[in-house]
Image 1 (cartoon, rainbow over the protein chains, first blue to last red):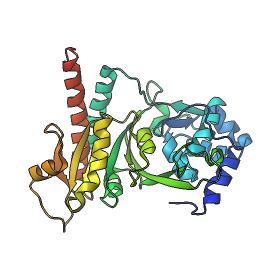
Image 2 (cartoon, each protein chain N blue to C red):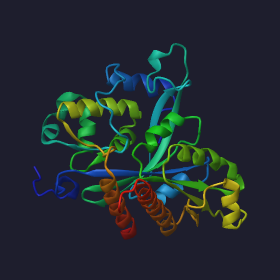
Image 3 (cartoon, chains in turn blue, red):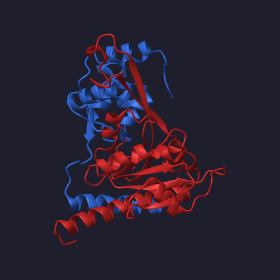
Length: 120
Length: 205
C-alpha cells in the first residue's frame, strides 16, 4: 500500500501539508482512536483538504491514528501533526489509551479483551 | 443529521472508547501479516514512518543535512470487540535495527506474540531479547509451515533459551482459530504476569 516510492513524494508534500511543522501539539499514541465532533462534521471543510478527508474518515466510526495514516497514505508523523491540530481545534475527539493505568484497570481491560477474543 | 446513531461506536455508554494493542513480532517472511489478517475485521493496513538513516529526529529529515531517509512500514489489523472497545494487532517492522519504532509500538501494549519459523530460528532472538528487556509479556508461536521441520516443542524452547513460564505453542498463522488461540494465550499470560507481580509486591489479588 506504499503510495509513492519516490522519497520526495513521501516527504515533501506531506510536510507541506503541515506547513513544515514536524512536532505534533501532543503525543498521540498509534492506537489512540479519534471520532469527528459535530463541529468537525460541519467545519472541517474550512480547514483544508487533508483535514476534511480525516474528518470524513472518522465521522461515525472511531479510527486509530494508524488507520488515519494508512487511509490517507500520509506518514505516521504527518498524520499525527494534522490530527493533533484537529483535536486542538475541536474537530476531532481524542480517545487516548490509558498508559498509566493502575493494576485493577489493567486487569479489567485484559479480562474484557480475553472475553472479546473468545467470542470471535 | 443522523441522531439515531446507526454506528454503535458513536454511542458508547460512557462516551469513552478504549483501544488496546497486541504486538506480533518475528523475522522477515515468518507470517506476521498473515497472522494479523487471519483475525482482523479489515484487510491489514500499512502505516509508514519516515525517518533518517541515523534514526535521529524521527520523521524530521530537515534537521539532518545530507542524510538519507528510510521508510519503516508496519502492518496492522483491527478487531472491534464492543461499541467501546477496539483491539489493534500490530506487526513489527521486519528490520530489527529500527528499535525506536518498536518502543513506540510496545508502549502500552497488552503483550506480544513472537512468531517463529523453525527453519530460521535465530530470527526470533532479537524480538525475544527486546521484549524481555522491556518486560513486556510475550508468548512464542511456532508457525507450522508445511515444509518446516517438526521439532519437539521443548527442543524449540531450548534453542530459544526462553524461561519455562513463557508459553510456547504450535500454530498456523493462516488459520483463524489457531491465531485466536495464540492471542488468547498472550492475554492469559499477561494476566498471569500481572498477578505474579502483584503477589510479589504483597498485594492480595
